[in-house]
Image (cartoon, rainbow, N blue to C red):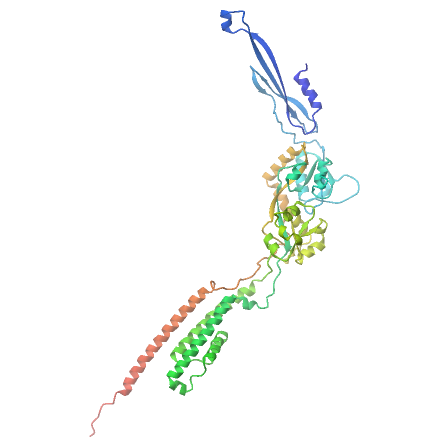
Length: 525
């Protein structure tokens, strides 16, 4: 028989780093006792009792890589539970300068380092958003970082193994992969993921909207329906004036005899069109009805000219630009080809069954990471041949390297994300440092430090102007206010005409009465 303390020491020698659990040992003691009733009646009837003793030991890690079993609690039948330390103690936040191997790849603005032969590279020789976050984590946990460079995040191959950083962790050639991973169920079978360090949306980087020259811009102030209505009204008024002129010619022959009535329906239609263009005419009807119709034509021409001239300023001042690609729907409907990086989860999800780009899979261009980081590729994006579809950190980081720092931007960041993913780090299964790193990540997110670091690296270098499609043409709904003014003007002009006719009638009546009255007879002497 060994004591519980000896058992703890023996089991401590076999504990593997990262193991979790408790050691429980139970023992019982049998005692004979006589109850008070037995003492009174029968002293020869003894009673047996059992006393249970339970000891609990928990795993404890001081942080230097060693793991121990320590007695944490005891329980006895009569004494109850006595807890001396935590059953699940938190690992130490001081790793004692232990070496942590960090798998990494080159990703612009995220994790960048220089290739060199031989020697071990640390975080001091790298740069980027994730590198800055890891430097803060290293400062809190006190470990020594060694970079293990590889290629790609990691995809499942046909033989069942993984490549990239996931493969490095699966083979335990590194302790963690410090990059912005997108978690997936397949990856979670071979690695553990940390808490989310942020969000990384899948965005579209395309050509910046360029100014568009429209030769017939002044004809686009009104919609085609409004233009058709204006021409129809002008022609209708010409027909009405022609009919009125013909009627006045035949009913009032004295007007025709004096040569004051000239023309016919076609001439009046041309005359009304001239009124709209020239704001005046050399031929005017002389009859009352014709004058009233001509006045209405003048009012229509003035209102149309005022609305047209007032809108010219807006159409000339606000530039027209090509339509931007703000969403994946805009990209699918356009002639621009989507471009995605090979061997990425974004490519698998967007072009797979049910993906946003599954319907245009034959148009999708697939490029390696080196190609999407080249000036040739972004020249293709700048001229509208391709549009890069990638996570925000990768797309913006690559585009900023070739963007102008002036007003005329080369690239445009779509406003609507294709989808939003979480950013996590990857660790080997049952990692002994995952809990400590998670604790630091929670504190950094709570205080906004991670978002501040990310904004420093991922601010868009040039904000493209998207006052996009200029001023829209005026439709019937927009010009209805001018139509109300026109109707009011026609009513006022009609009332003025009627008042003029009434005054003339009264004046003519009084004049004819005065002329027809004979002078008084004066007797001659």
